[in-house]
Length: 326
Image (tube, rainbow, N blue to C red; front, top):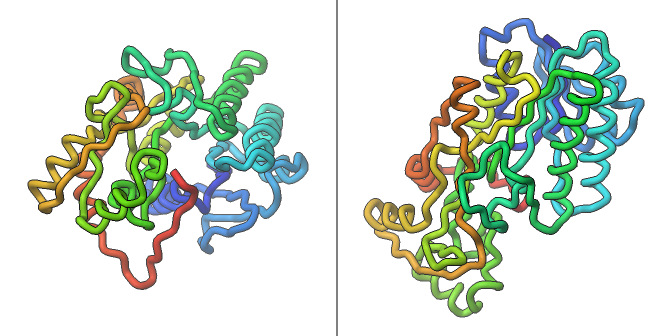
C-alpha cells in the first residue's frame, strides 16, 4: 500500500500517521505526505512531496503510484486558500486518482458544517441521507463542494471512494479550553455576542463553566469526536468492502449535553455552571451507519472527553497549538 495523505502535519494527520506506523498490520506500507508549508517527521516509511495542492503537476506527481489517497487538508475562513485546497485541490486529486492504474480507494474527511452542525435546526437525527444545509461561510461551502465532487466521481467515473463526516475534533485539553471564559478560549462561541465583557470577566475570575442553552432554552447538545476516534474510523474504512462509495457520520455515540457536563464538573471538580442563552440548535449526528457497516466504535463519550481534557497536563515541550479556531 502506498497512501498519499494531505493534511498529514495537522491535528488528525499526526495522530493518524502515528497510528498507522505503529500497527503491524500496515508493516511495509509507505505513506506519502503532500506538504505545503510544513513537513512530517522523518521516518523510513514516510516520504514527502512539497508543493501546492492547487497545482495539477504537483498533485499528479504526488498521486503517481499510490494505491490510496486520503484528503484531509482544509482551510477555515480564507476564501482564496479554501478554494485552492477544497476546489482546485480536490479536483486535481480526483483527476489524478481516476486516471491512475494503481489507485484503489479515495478517502475524504469532511465536516458536519456541511449539514450546519449547531447553526441549522433539524427535527430528527442528522443521518447520511439528511439534506446538506451548510451555514453561511466559505468553510462550510467548501465541505459541501468536496462531498458533492466525490459523489460525482462515483457517478461519472465509477471510482471507489469513501467520505467520513466528522464534527468538532478534540484532542488533549481542547475541550477544557472550549469551556473557558478567559482569553485561552478555544473555538467558540464568541462570548462578546452572547454576554457582556463584565460578565465574561466575572465568570472567568470565578472559574465558572458555561451551560449553553439552545434556541428553545434547553441545554445545548453539540457533536464532537476525539482525534483518536477519528483516526480509528479512517483505519477502519481503509479497504473495507462496505465502505465503497459510502458517506459515514463519525461522531461520539451521543452529543455533548452542556448541562450534563456542567453537573459532572460540579460534582467532580467543584466548578459552578452559568446558564447562557444562544441562538444555536441542538442536533444529533447519528453514527449508527459507521458503527454497523465499518465495525467502528468511538472510545470517547462526553464524560471521558471532559475528564481527559481537564486532567491533561502539558509538558514544557508540548505548547498549546490551535490548528484553526474551531
